[in-house]
Image (cartoon, rainbow, N blue to C red; front, side, top):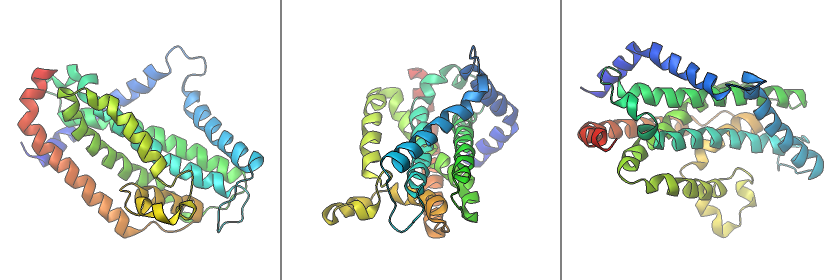
Length: 266
């Protein structure tokens, strides 16, 4: 079976994917007094804290933008990108272990499980973005029309992180060290990415790290669209699309060869 056939099978089982995502959200807020309200309250609190600390207490400014809340907007836009990337990558790494019983059911396409993980993370990210958008607007920050491309950027980030996570998941089945090493790598990559700082704040001798960071251009797409009101670079977007598609194709080739060993290991 080729990759296109697997995608068609996933579409045929789309009802399972949707119901599984809904079940995940229900389980997450089971026995909670506020229930699904936490999906809004949690990101709202995070954005509010960043705004209070950076704009009111520290009075941080963003070079090139005079608005009082420019720096929190810049920070939140970067964190939005980073959160969805790390959530998808981290959970996808555990997908064979977490959904081992599902993978043993041959009637269900294996890629449908990946769609459940990525779909759940994507919905979380869109909710966070909507809450952020409302709060930023309430603060009087003038946003450009390019903010409406953010959901598409979130989808691109989800697919990219999903492909990387799927490849890591194959390794994780046979070497559980991946689950321990990944958080350390992500923590290091976070501080190497211009999220809490701008490229101009980095000493000249270290700017090459930012310039060659594979995720820096991805985060910059969000910062340009939200904080600076600029159009996202189409060349950068196209590059990440090609990379994500190539990674998924590469994963599929490896997965077909290793599927029997993976099932035995589970």
